Amino acid sequence: MSEVTRTVVVRSTPLPRKLFRVFVELEGMYRNVVEQLVLCAVRNGITSFTRLKALRYRELRSLHPQLPSHYAYTACQDASTRAKSFFKRRKRGSAKRDYPEVKKVSIWLDDHLWRVKSLTSIEIATHKDWVAIELEQHKQYWRYINSGWRLASEAKVKLDRRGRQLIIYLTFKKSVEVYRPRGFVAVDVNENHVAVLVDDKACLFETGFRDIVLGYYYRRKRVQEKYGKLYGTSCRVEGRVLRRLKERRKKCDLRWKLANIITRAAKERQYAVVLERLGKNPAKDMINRIDDEQLRHRIYQASFKGVQKAVEEKAKERGVPVIYADPRKTSRMCPVHNAKIVYSDGSRVGRCSKGGEPWHRDVVACYNLLLRARLGDGGVAPSLGGFTLDGSPVPLGSTAAHDPILIAREVWARRKPLDAMNKHESLKMTI
Ligand SMILES: [Zn+2]
Image (spheres, rainbow, N blue to C red):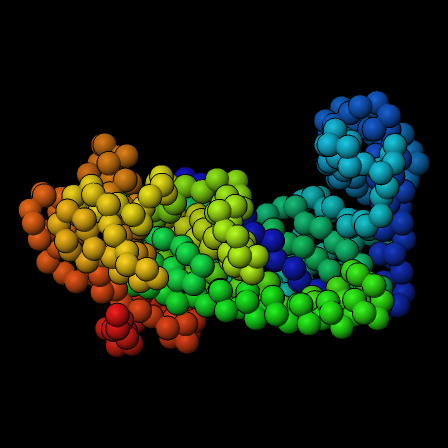
């Protein structure tokens, strides 16, 4: 069993001026309490919420007697978290002052300070009694409500003064049971493709991260040249323009879609997902060997880790086990003959130096990951899905090893399940 947590942001409907003022007052008092507690915690070197509460609870209650008593608890939690991160920053040497500043405040609520009134409204305890708040609904909120997630007792509230709205951070939780895998889905990520091997069927998902990143690179260069001449390097206007280039969001979206497809395929078959075990900064290790500055940037930005993270998150949500395998030489060794694979320059398809059979670079990586995952896990021996390692000269009946199914981005980005794509929309790869 593992527990998955997600935060969903919901806005209240715009509040009447008078009602909104109640929350402005509440926030003021809460901020005041947190400021004092943070000072106290830092001065006394306290990071424990219970110690902080024991020390200051009585005083806080007498200071703001009109405030519901549980705000003293949540403020202590808030303050001890702030103190903890301040101590961490100070240790790293990145703290600018002797005391942490309390700039942004969100009001922490526990189960005594808010309650659900209906699916579309909540009540919050304030110094002026309970206040009912209507929520603005959106698709994501309903998806969580309707799909087995339960609302946790903690919540946070921020004020949007311009729109006179409350921004409410709700926490949803779900317990997920991780199943015992009956097989594996191997996933290999590189800068322009994600290769997925399921039941001896290899699919290459075109991600185009390279093109997204390269496009961004050129546009960024142009922006820098333009504004650099006008205002000198790294000015604020430039940053704003660059942010608008939205590289990040585009990539992020594709990652989630891909993660959805992969984990759904694994779940349907009760398989585990096999990923490369990556170092702390995999892209950085890779680029050290590359001289071309443009290519370095490109690979660095392609962020392998991002794809992996999305797959990990989605797998956790669906109870899909994840296994990590050593990524060394995965595309250079033949998994059947344990011999080197020779690639003639630039080609994605190479030949085994012993058996002479063709291997697609990304697919062989998947087979190696699969093999390592299987060898690493001695107990259960899930089927390799038709792939046998008996050393016979032509071990692979299928053409999957050198002729994977290439799935164009336009196809998978529409979020079809893997099987549907295999049947109807696959494009045979031409080598
Ligand atoms: Zn071979």
